[in-house]
Figure 1 (cartoon, rainbow, N blue to C red):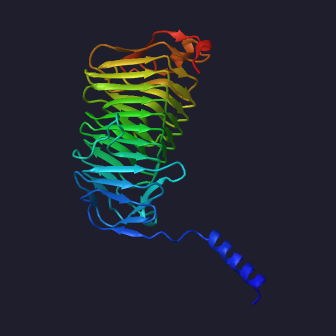
Figure 2: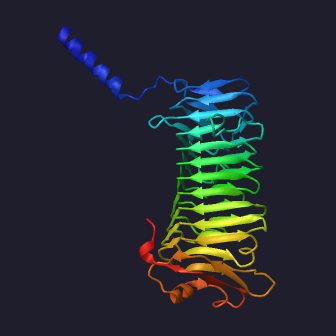
Figure 3: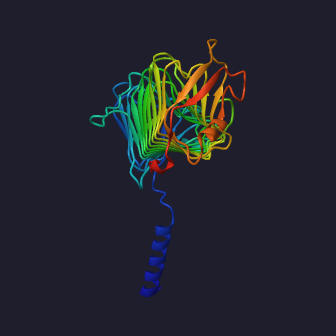
Length: 366
């Protein structure tokens, strides 16, 4: 064989090797709990979790950018220690079920390494992708007293994306939730700061503890079940501040006040409502139980009602639910009242809506 022919064959083999997928990565099976500081690397990826994996108190699991982690059927990660999963823009960290199967997500316990916002230490997930199967994980991330941060992540097809309990404080920033039944459930006594996220094709969000919910874009939520949209369900004290968000194309209602206590505050300000079946659904019994502020929102339009009250109502004399100064597009006050479902439309509802002021459409904030 002459030299020129050898060179051509060598170049062809090199080209084939370049085009073929890189198969140099090894599969690492994880069947033992993590009791000391551990690093998972892209080179040893994918990692296959074969048990309910415990990260013990005092131990840190660090996951390198580009690493893939698969969970065997119905397994989960239980965190008493610290997890640091920090990917990069082009090297995101993947968490999924093995062979797209069901898995049970992450359970964070109170002894975990709490996220510290001052120095960015503690449990953190950044530039990660989480994939569920629709019904599973039932809770992708469930924290029972552990503080954590999720930033620039994508969460797809989890039944519940993130649930906070027992005074846990969670920060969720610049992340995307798709096709989740419930992207977020902030239970009473816990806290959340939810900013600059996208939530698409989901069903409901439950807010019961102190929550800052701002600058998020929510679109195409379904109206399935008795609870859909963003639901305020406060049984204890706290403040839920919903501000500067976009609520677009909700099949049911966009925001619902279900329950409030005397120690709770509900604030709805500077939000945009577009193409929703009903923009606000308010409990005529609980809206005045705590402190409710609804003002300077931009109600572009509605399909059925701008505001709908629902029973049961208070046993006392007829209640008045005050709605502050808001933007209502081109509607006159009479047209706004006609877009309201209260005592005037159903005598069983012992409450009415009162509008404080209609702001000039020309002053609508952009």
